[in-house]
Length: 638
View 1 (spheres, rainbow, N blue to C red):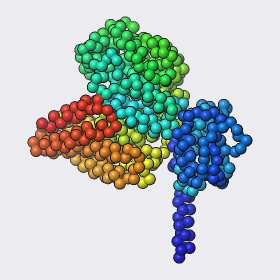
View 2 (view 1 turned 30 degrees about the horizontal axis):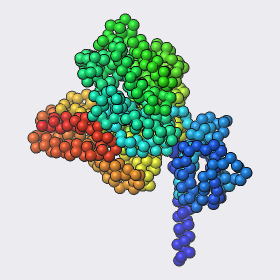
View 3 (view 1 turned 45 degrees about the vertical axis):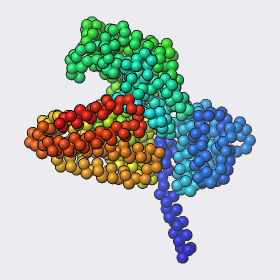
View 4 (view 1 turned 180 degrees about the horizontal axis):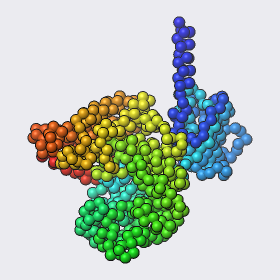
């Protein structure tokens, strides 16, 4: 009987081993992988490298940990002496391109060659993941990997100006995660959230990044082969400055004027005000010395007030595009004095394609677009034809959504990657915005973070990957796969409503337009009871599945709280819709006083939860702005 039990157990192990796919453990999937016959047959040995770089120490520790799991003792021994055969031999190979590497496991040892130190680090990260596979199947397989990224620059931009400024602990955690996915650039989108010494009026309630914090974060990024690129908007999106009396004179439109976005004021600096350029020069002088990066993103997107106010006459004389370009180039001149390469958002100059060839070739255009069918093909071709370096910049589609818009996001991310690679983009920057109060929690953005990171490394290997499984394994450390699947599904809950809205989803719009009737609304007219009830059930079921997951990441409790909060806010928007649908005119003021009170109690609790959950990852600055936007909805119930 004992023999039968042992035999059955060995069959089970064998079956388990055969069912494991090594690609399920590798993220990003290498460009080329070939499994060979045999397995590594060493019990001990050194990990040796010709040129020691302390930045790879953490990755070496990961490899040592995985080797130990499989009963292989290793010792890190920086050495020039290869008369003995080390267990892991690493060296720079000048024949390889920067960031590219080869990794070979044979029966006696492991050999790594990289085009630079970053490449060696990437190879070690891959080797550690192979170790996880080895731990699952019981051996280290012989194999050959040849790997290199499709995009030299692979990054994520975090919006820290739409209310949420992450704590330093959160930022360090994100650096660790992003580095493990082989990302090498981070930007913190800034309007008013750096503590400029002479401008406390602007940032006093924002809990801004300080010079010392930027320096510490920059150093931490360097140790993880990540470039922390300074980012300061310098033309449009300056409302956080211009609403204050001492800066009002710099506004293109100090008083409301008619723009393509309707009546607006104080969102753009005026290029005809000398003080505009002087202000930016002062800010650059204080900001840039805190960063080691050779790049600087000066923004300059969505200058929708340009030509409507103070610059109207000049725009008529020489053209709006020329006025924009002249100001952009003046900013660049100042950036040049710091030895930095200017990055800028490419949307405005694309409206004036005849001017693109005039852009200096030492600038970098950032082509952004967030719709699934954005014209990346056309826009990339325009910059490529001019010889100007450029990035593609899709987004997570989580802003104005509460739970995300994953179907749109994944298509948008893939569209950018395919066309960026086609036209030779040097970079891929995945943007995570926080419009309208940044109500979506960080956890909602991870599926898009993951997919963007994968595509930026290798487009062809990742167009059809299982994002559920990758999130579960590489974000939430969940062996049930329930967490990744549930969060991805929740990001598609908006599809259950059968209602699509521009740059947002139905949950956000139901709250934003709470005072308006559903009937006759350009977006919400098709909201109906059956779909809304089904959506509520769908959200509740996915949340239940998430709560059953075996999440073992360090932020497990935060993830669960964040997702429950987001679900409750989305469900509240559905409850509001159902109550409106009880009345023929679907107006808010038709809802009974008793039902309005129920809405008030429900949203009030969501607001209180929003406050406490916010502080788990973010600083207190900006929280009141975010909650005030929820309170505006609350007031409509009274």
